[in-house]
Structure formats: C-alpha cells, structure tokens
Amino acid sequence: MPKIVLLWSDVVVLLTAVAIAAYGWRIGRSPTQRATWARVFRDAPALCATVVLLMFFAVALLDSLHFRRALPPAPGVSQQQAYGTHTESVLDLLLARQLAGRETTYSAPLATRALVKDSIEVDGRAERVHPRLQFGGAHLHDDVAERGADIVRRAGAGMLGGLAVAAALAAAVAGAMAWRRGLRLAEAARLLLRNQTELPLRAALLTLLVLALVAGPTLVLAQDYHVFGTDRTGNDVFYQALKSIRTAFVIGTLSTLATLPFAMLFGILAGYLGGWVDEVIQYLYTTLSSVPNVLLIAACVLMMQVFIDKNPELFETGAERADVRLFLLCVILGVTGWATLCRLLRAETMKLRELDYVQAATAFGVGGARIMRRHVLPNVVHLIIITTVLDFSALVLYEAVLSYIGVGVDPAMNSFGGMINLARNEMSRDPLVWWSFAAAFGFMVALVLAANLFADAVRDAFDPRARLFRPRRILPARPQRAAG
Image (cartoon, rainbow, N blue to C red):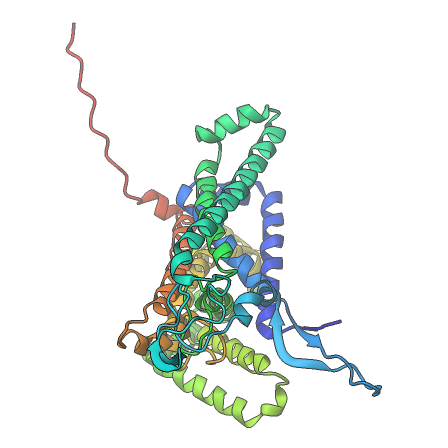
C-alpha cells in the first residue's frame, strides 16, 4: 500500500473544496443568498467562467492527492515497509506517459525530431542531423511521410470523443431539466437551444463544447507526441503547464485566506472603537503600505530560505521542502497585503456604527464584541467576498512576477512564473523556442480571465452601488404619433 502524504498546501486545497461545498449547502438553505448568487450566474460570461474555473480546480484537486510508493522488500530480509523518496500525485499517474517520455533536449510541439542537430553515423559517415525523439512520434516507421496524416487522424478521433462527451453532458442537463420541470426530453432540449432557461445554460454548454473540442485532441495526441513540445532538459511542457495550475490556485487561495484575519480584525476594530485604537491601526497599515511590496516580500522570502537551508532534517522529501516554501510564501503575501481590505472594512464599519439599530443595541447595554459579531460582521461580508474574488487573479499574476525575479516558489516546483522565467533566455536563442512561454501565457491568461469575469459578476451582484451606477445603454426615443 502506498503511503498517503498530506502536504500543507494539500490541506488548503482540500479544505477549499470542503468550504465551497459547505457554502453551497448554506446558500441552498438561505433564500436571500440563493437569490444573490442566482443573480451572479444569470450573467452568461460569469457562468461560462465558472465552468472554466471548475475545470482548473479539478486539475488542482487531482494534483493535491499525494502519496509515496511502497518499495519491495529486500529478498531474505524481514524489515519494516520502506517507501520511495519521490512524492507523486494522482495527476502524475494520469500523466505517466508524459512524465516517462523525457527527451534529451528541445523539441517543437508535435515534432518527431529534436530541435538541435546532433552527430549521427549514417552509412559509416558522421552527419549532423536532427535525431529522432525517443518518445514523440516513436510509433511511426517513417516520421516524415506518416507524421501529418497520423496527427490529423488522432486529432479527428479526439474531436469526435470530445464531441461525444459534450453531447452526453448536454443530454444529462436536458434530462435533469425535464425531470425537474415535468417536461419531455425533446421539449427541454428545445428550451435549451432557444436559451429559454432561467440560467444561461446554452452558453455554459457551448463553453463545455469548446473545452471538449480542445481537450479531446490534446489528450489523444499527448499519448504519443509532445503536444506543447519539450524544454531544455527534455521535459514535457504540457505536463509542466498542468502541474502549474495547482500552484496558481494555492497562491491565490491561501494568500487571500492569510489576508482575511488581519484585515477583518483590524478593520472592524478601527472602525467601531475609533480613538487611539483607530490611530494605531492606521499607523500600522500606512507604514506597511509605504514599504515597497516586492522588497518586503523578497526580504521575507530570503530569510525563510535561510531557515529551510539550515534545517534540512525537518523535511523527508524535496516535495515537502518545496511545499513549505510555497506555504510560507502565501503567508508572507497575506501578512503584507491586508491593508487595502482593512481600509474598506474600517470605512464600512464607521458607517454601520452610526445606524439606528447599532445605536439602539449600544443604548440597551449590549457589549461591543457582541455588536461587532452580530451586527457589524454580517454586514461587511459582501466586501470580504468581493475583495477575495478580485484579489485571486491579482495574486496569480503576482506569483509570476515574484518567480520571474527569483523570489517566488521553489525552482523544483512547477509554476507559470517559473516557466516564464526559464523561457526568458529561450526567446532570444536561434532557433527561437517559443512554446514554453506560449503555454504558460495561454494557461495563465485563461485562468486569470475566467477569474476576472467571475469576479465582475460577483461585484455587481453583491454591491448595490455597482448595480445602481452601472452604465446602461440609452435606447432611442420612440417617434410620437401625429395626433388624429
């Protein structure tokens, strides 16, 4: 039996999944919250973005289930079960062919030969040619003549498979709608096609169709090719991009969670108590905001790295060491980034403490802690939700910047920033190696764009002022009919 390994960041991802499920159950029991979130998902871009985010989160969840393989016992020796030093995840098992198909150097996407020439003996003579890859297109007898037709055939099969999966999901949605409304299946499908549903399900199904048509050929081709090419050491770029999704999710989620305790506590205390408490807290976040964030984070990361280097006995494997660095980086981002939300909560609390029901509670002798917990905190939750969702995409981009300057996650851990940092020199070489940068850029843009679209809808639904002052299209005035 393998040994289950629970890293610090795994706990965060799993607790996030549990928290989302619990919050969804709570929304289902509250008509007010259900109506507010229904307003979010009535926005077609937000619902499409939710589908994309769920796909990314599923990849991050699969990459958060870690284990270590059990080693076979030595013959004739009875000893305690030993485990390998390499920590793997469920995603590693699914991508075992990409992990095992390591080449010696660069190769272009869907290539069968290496990018760099090598000396090979042909008919007794040494020639400089592009050697065949060990994994990419190794099943082809004549890679020059068969490669194009083989790629087209496999891509077509993948598209048909993706189309079948999308059709099955659409049929499941239509069946669920027919069962819920007491309709026939054909009638429910007709409502979906005409977009006559409460939520824009047609847009969500179209998003699923596009994702299936992209993922299907990619997964089929990845069985025998390097879809996104390989890097300098021959590692599959598609594998690295998928592994980087978990790092982005952990950075965005854990850093935001680390921000909340400081921002909520200091913001509400400063706004409600005022006086010297308000002045001290203002002094704290003003001083913190005056220090350049990058320098402060770099100093903290370097001190953390010194501690890790001086205490190697605390970590059994390299994965645990890299994970601790990722966890502490998120904590540092959270500790140094609570000032903005603190300002918002302080201002909102100062407004709430002057309202009649808070004044009445104070007049009846209710304690300050009870008022802040029962009357102030529930009325600032919308600000916390809006800021949390908006900060997610900003923190994903922030990790890329920190890794680019060398103070981000551990170099052994896959991340979008690390891929872009390694591609910095590749973009200036000849021939140009663009696929590592393009893969990291594409995945990161897809993730951040989906998060931004979802955040915009959350802000519009939870902030009444955003709905009030939202720009509206002015319709032309109808011509007045002539009297008589």
